[in-house]
Image (cartoon, rainbow, N blue to C red; front, side, top):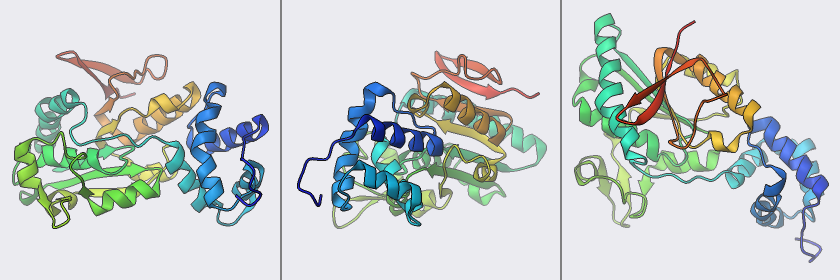
Length: 287
């Protein structure tokens, strides 16, 4: 902060930043959340040497390096709350019902390919969890002619770099069942837990914006998509756009898991609601 004065966000700056964030990502900050955006960005603006929000906004609009700064901005304004084996009830349905069904269907057709997508994946806990569940449920599947892909994507390059390292502390692995911890992690000399190559080898990580219709085409043909605790950041038009994009990425009859507190009510009629033991998820309807 060059002037020594406290940086404050005017309403004009708030609306300008909010609109830019929304246009690029669909993440929406309502008026009552102005203080959250301000508090999260002040340190970034100070550390980057800007005098005020107006100069920062000018940079985002005109500087050749603005795309890199937007990546840092998205990392700051999104909440990367995640953990291994999060929302275990959904994962149990995935492991015991949905996954075996998709494997059985693939066996019938002779097309031994399985594609699963975690979006957003944050620091990697969810896609690595899905990989562990798959490998545990179907041991040796990789050596039987199957083409297995588990994709993780996020709008933040920072959290993706952390995911690529695959290294976690005691708090991060607190919910990992002991058998999975023993089989799929190695504790290194610094006390960190490193995800084994068997798991990391089937997980692919990509820098993807769920608003980017063109780039999302690389995810066409997904069997199962986890997009949990994401819709809460979007307004209704953005939710509809994101869900429509996911629909296009799912294969016929594919499954979508969203957060247990989220719903597609008034968002999309293109999915059938499935209820197994009071665990709700969605299946793509054709046509």
